[in-house]
Image (tube, rainbow, N blue to C red; front, side, top):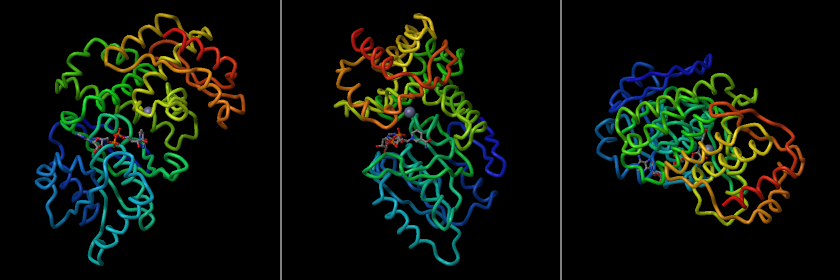
Length: 362
Ligand SMILES: NC(=O)c1ccc[n+]([C@@H]2O[C@H](COP(=O)([O-])OP(=O)(O)OC[C@H]3O[C@@H](n4cnc5c(N)ncnc54)[C@H](O)[C@@H]3O)[C@@H](O)[C@H]2O)c1
Ligand SMILES: [Zn+2]
């Protein structure tokens, strides 16, 4: 078992990574006196796939299961209050309740949010089951739900007591969801870890075949990097966490303003990374070779490196957005593989020009 320490003063906790580590959770809970009634928040799909494992690991008299819908639907006002109502029913005088989020990023975001506001905060632990949540969403203590007006609009910073990551969950993940996580893994290589970028490129066959050692190494290295960045800038106040947004400006624009609603977040991030590299090249910040390397690895993992899009419409739509109106666009740009910089005040003219180029290239 690998252990990553997330040192955050009174919010310090560990990330435990290893195959079959769920069995360690009940003893961890006892030793750390988290409570005597664990509320396992999970999604319907994860529950249907892992019912036996869950029942075997968490005994019925000390744990109760709360199933929420799959995907983004769970991060809603409706499910926030449904879950809280269930907790209130179970929270009798002799019980000390805590939460276990067992699922993807949506379950983690909802469960973490519930834990942070119920009775002004109860303990929770994360057991992420998608690649994205194992390498990203479960680490960092950001919790949120969506309102119809905006995604992640209600949320808190609230650290879990521990994070338990079992890479075997990835075996049942649909291929497309796996690739989506890979986009964020590639991002970690591009922004800070050149060696890791080449590890991903050179071992692509082993990784996509989910070879146990390679998968474990991949998750461990990404989780460690996310933890490291979070440690330095827990509440996103110092701008250090900003580099995690590499590829995300364009991704959000595409997700928000185009008809590409079928594009997953990871696919949009893959495109966004190519776009950011293209813009960096245009501004003379990186070499063409760096852009090509990013494109190649994205293709290698079956992610899109190009889309046919109407850049005029996208630019026009973006120009109505508050972020862009100010004319001081802030973006994470590439210097070379493993090194990025945050650039402020990029003009909309340049954005438009690079978008034209991006659309024209393909
Ligand atoms: N808090 C953060 O810092 C942070 C960071 C990044 C993303 N997020 C959030 O994460 C969410 C996306 O999370 P996600 O990509 O993990 O997807 P998800 O939680 O929506 O899960 C996707 C689907 O996979 C199913 N699933 C989960 N684990 C599975 C498994 N092992 N096998 C088979 N199916 C499985 C789920 O039931 C669901 O149907 C978004 O809401 C995003 O905003 C949060
Ligand atoms: Zn992302």
